[in-house]
Length: 208
Image 1 (spheres, helix red, strand yellow):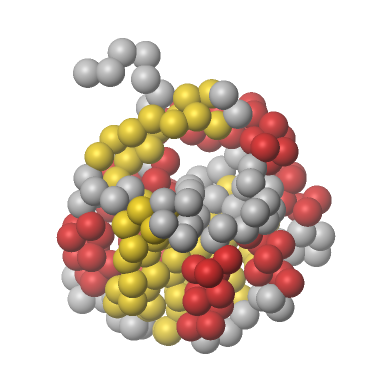
Image 2 (cartoon, one colour):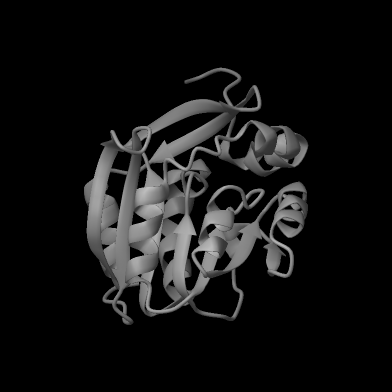
């Protein structure tokens, strides 16, 4: 067992403490652009939920310029404050995604480099939450690891936890929650080796 390694329960406190520094250091190169473009093209409307929105830059800014109406969610108040500053006039909710219940459905949901900070069990519990916030036909875009694993990275020099399920388990969880997988590219060479999922909500679950 890893000694002194960060746990998933520490992630929100970490982003609360170093969020402004992380935001200042976060790449603005928009290597995500290709996936974001596909995401907005398949979304049936313009209401987008950015789960783990961070500062809102560069992803929410790109989405706004693409005429999407972005609502942010983040479990760190410092990140919500940055989002509100960078996306004036847009709603942002300070809440842990694991307990998210906004009472609203969206045309697209994105969890880019956020969902994978959760434990495997918490990740399994997110798929019904995604479904509860998705309109029929909604697009879902998220990042994971390429295979089942636990890994450790850093945010502004502070170690952080990452986890991934096996891709076949993600496929099963998506299907059970009513999502059809449109694409999965592990370690996409055109996206700084992010492993990316794109799915569409069919409007009904088969086994949640």
